[in-house]
Length: 608
Image 1 (cartoon, helix red, strand yellow):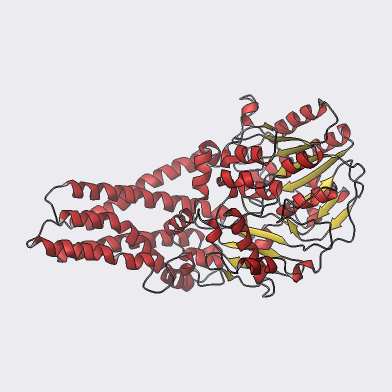
Image 2: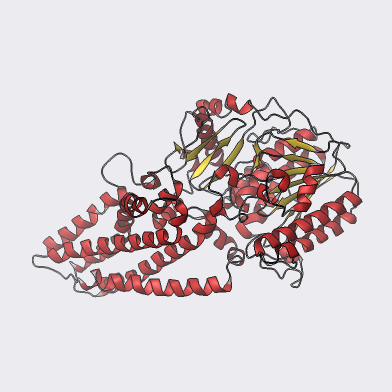
């Protein structure tokens, strides 16, 4: 029986040690950027992460524990073989999680969840498009080495503690069964009412310090087990109370427009351009650097919102907000749930239903990535042009066809139009995305691939807008970014509000108002109601969307990324740590009920 107890102790100890080694590696790579002291990183964060490490270790111990129970009952070597094979599987699992987490955190700013799994399963090629050959080789070597080291650590410790049928046999079996049952306690996180969850790792107002304490495997498993029963998550109020709290009075405070946009034609052709990874930090007129100078010029001439925000951090989170008025979610992506996405009204479908618009979509990449085609078809797009519609030479980039190729294809179709029906055309760019390999070099940015890629995308945009203005005098051109991502580096933008600020610009021959700077706070989910109202159409199919041009409506931005969600108004903000539902520092207490209510209502709508 002592050997059984020793084996269980060895298993737990080795698994916890491996996870503490991962945390040490994480601190070595990202600790300096957290701004925390050595005692906070190596003391407090390690201590607060220990409970979650213990929980994960208990989960990983279950299979060898059951093999140990089996060994007390039989002389067969089958349980032993299963146990040894499992050590290699566990080693490979931990190695894969640790490497992915370390590699992605620098770009994403949160510990590993199901997001990369969703990306990879929908289109492996697109999911790996940002990975350089050196990174791929380095990752593969690191995975092989870490798998071998982890498996050997288990085999040379717990694996050497052999257990066989004892006399009397029942004592060993009962001991092994009892110890296996006791694993439930660390799995659950103890005997208190609250079970183990991510909030156990959150102990500081410094979010990066909390991230040190988070166990990446637990984060992944927690995300995987919270992809269903969405309407039962984030229940802060009764349904009626949530509806009342969702539109706080403070949201109608400063920021309402004093001027309204006017149109020169009742049914303009609408061209919506979704720019990959652009942010306010690229435009001088919005306080940024002189990188996207063409867009900056377009913004100065047309109408630009100075306090506009991306809903989330990736394109699949942005498209339902931009094209369907549905706010992004912190823990899931609506586009993962094709059946739910089909039930969400689409801007294209409403323009077609209410005003007879013809709808088309242009994108140079894999249209099946993140279930994009299913979502676009369901939201009302009749014609979709994507990577498969370009030749191999045209689609030679990592993300398929480069921006100028996609825009030229769209222009050729626009020029050859037939009939008088108004058109709703969406062009989604992709070249300003890692790995930033573009067929263009701007002398100003020759030494920086990132800024050069943005300068290239900006030049394509400028040429496209100029062409539209020449060939379509009734064009209403709407330009918006999908999300902030890569410039400036995410690590330099620690404030989530600053990180999510993106341009929203309206221009074109159909626009009767020029040189407008609107300070109304809003986010991508407000585009649908704003456009429909501007056209004199009914925006009611989009209950989460507000007309940015109507002073009587509440105006606030919704932002959500893993671990954080909340609202930003003209007078303040309320941001929640979604792991525990607790407010982040600098949150306005008056706005917290509204942030919680919106989070609840979004998930209630998803659960229908």
